Length: 209
Image 1 (tube, rainbow, N blue to C red):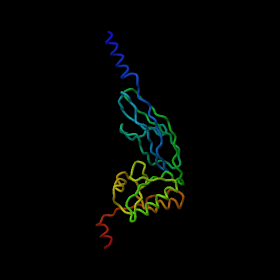
Image 2 (tube, rainbow, N blue to C red):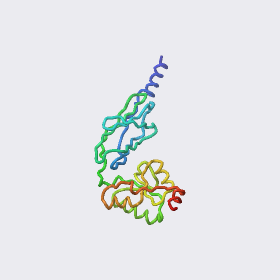
Image 3 (tube, one colour):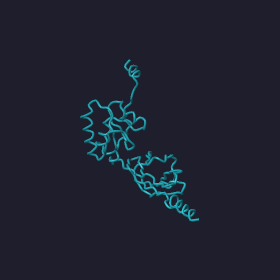
Image 4 (cartoon, helix red, strand yellow):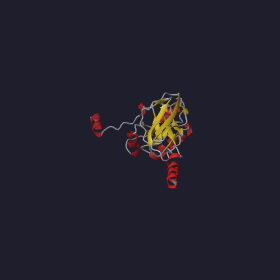
């Protein structure tokens, strides 16, 4: 009997005393129409994750979130609008809800949410240096490589790893004039008029004819 109860105590200590921890949610980056939600790596102890759901204003979103992911980018949000978010994890040990956070998307004159990476330039050193200075002046930021936070790729020419990554993740690829006009007009500008289009060589030949 002693061995039996010692075994029960061991099972309880291993599987029954530590529940999964409620996830901790925060906003990583925010723009006029998008934001990135991030949470700490899940602490499940001995439980198994069954699902992870994102809630916006109390409604569950349809996006499927893999268990090994700790962020999500939400796009297509209304400008200058407050939203409420939380996440719920369902595990073999029960259901656990995160903290609730409120986040407001930026107004059109707030340029601090811009996060750019750089593609190919005719004169990369001088052009990119000037653009970095401009980004510092308006309170925006940049990175060497395209990542989840990148909002735009600045480039004069198509091609390169950052260009391919931007295409793959549907990140706007725009000429540097887009950023200049954002600064000049003191508000975010539509990206479409400044898109770089990679025209096939045969199309160029036909146009020249």
